[in-house]
Length: 356
Image (cartoon, rainbow, N blue to C red; front, side):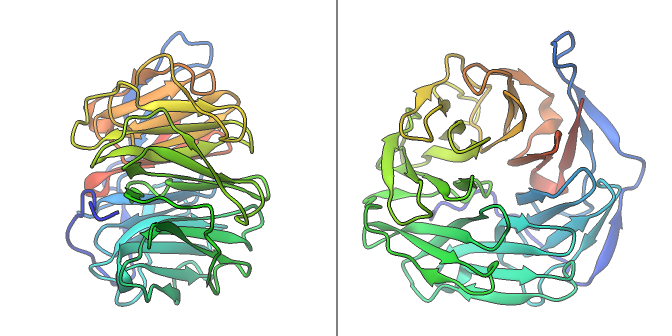
């Protein structure tokens, strides 16, 4: 996507440990009285000026972040301290997606036209990195990457090249990448949003989905590992800076899409949709979000969290209805939940953990 949202400045490349100054502080109390219990965001910020739109949570202790100044950060103690483990020479890159298998192994994607789109991989916690992909197509602009369970098979997507979404795939954990056949992915005038690393998501063993905006606000689905694709109307409004920004699937059938127009962050009307048939059809949520939302993730069961630059929303019915929670200081661009713990991140080193 040529509209690059919120690029921050400055990256420190030396390997350092960033420890929270006082103890982590709870910044918001969620829905008191709800049967699911109250939800609180707890601040576990990183001491950096970089903004975060790349996040992957391994568990309640371990999470990885990618920054807008070329920084990669990792915690293994629940956010009490953060290590900067950036690839050498990455200053100035915009890391917008990270996919981690463990505290040791992770893949990060940088975005941009042509050679700015790169993929790096580490298997030793960021002590060393290997660049495994660099785009050679001037017209390509990669937005998101994801892996299927097991971590060997993966997929990444670029804005359309010659009118078709550009897809690359890997079968060796991201060590090498190949351009895939994209017949059936015609998308003239459409593009993806490098807003949270969730414009492309996977589920099950062969299912994946792409969301975008621009000329249309469609969601593209594959159920055979990327060999064939179909598209459906997301029901989310589209425009030059609008469309689907974030996708989340709890299984191969149940999914949620969120988005809007990033020029109107307080407008939450028709900004969320849900699917119960693997993305073949989408239904607009019956209640509005609190504003434009960039990412969504399932906590567990029927409950999901959506985040954006003016706050957070929660759904307890698979995305059919939403209610806001949180305060102004809990603005985030990206959220990822695993084993009942949610991590979120945003501008200026802001990171939060959602506890119940």
